[in-house]
Image (cartoon, rainbow, N blue to C red; front, side, top):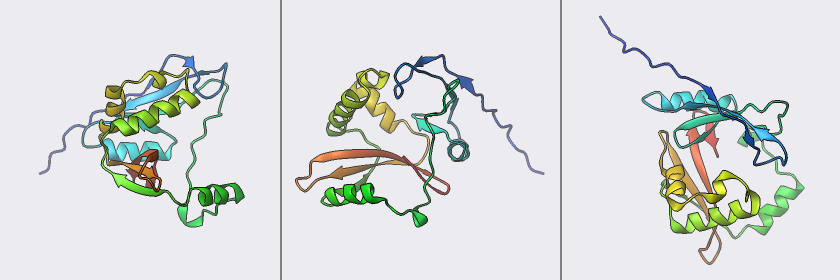
Length: 172
């Protein structure tokens, strides 16, 4: 005889409309659910295939009325061929070295993150994140996650990418 513990159902919620951080004059709404417990990784995997992204222990996807500007993409690495612009960017950045690191926030990453937010999303809610908020974003994860740091020849941090493992690849 075997006993199965009852599965806790996943509840999905929609957020209130907020100013869109990507398209001026538009509003955004998201559908969200919690990633927790022993099924967090498998749920994240399934939702990622359906276009969801992750922040902390929340999976979310845009459900903006009348807009589909935010389109998640999946790239099959084995068949990817860079275009001319991508080749030029790779050539310009050929001196950069990528390092995989545990998901631990540093002051150096945070300062780079702040600069990026001020330039690209100054009006967004992430622009005012404290170091504590940033650390929670990086470290509060129920799934296998790491950071990829990009450093120049002088070992200066010039980029960082929070990366999750999913069943058939990576999500960043």
